[in-house]
Image (cartoon, rainbow, N blue to C red; front, side, top):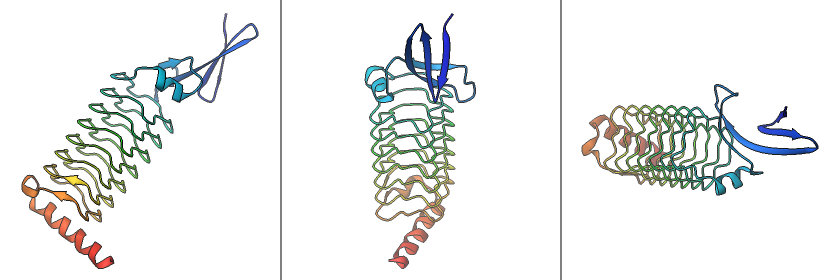
Length: 216
């Protein structure tokens, strides 16, 4: 019978005098449910060795995880906890992040083209230079998020909360901003096509621009 020891997110299997260390990803709701495991010593080695393209990581607990430059194209991360995770340069094209918690996460230069982020929490997340073309951000919380230079062309931001977000230099051409909350958002040098938005959105952009001009 194996002697199992768990320490800080690692499983140690004691066999005679040998100890084998495994890295694993557990469900955020059921810690006995292991979604993925590897014999590699570090998460970086796991990502280099494993093919997580299209992986099912629903409900995964990845809080604070370093997933820099990982390939998660088409992965299912619905309801996953990615709070404060490092996803810089990560490929999440077409990934499902519905209801995911990405609060404070670093997504700088990540590829989220066509990703589903409906109802996701991106409060205070860093999305500078991120590709969100065609992404679904309906009802997403982007309060205080940094979207400087982000590509949001054709993105769906209906009912999204962008209060206090930094959209400086972002591409919002053909984006759907219907009923989005843009209060106190920075919109300087944004590229916007208001033919697909409501007049009140255009008015809010003008209000924000006037505020920024008065502060300079």
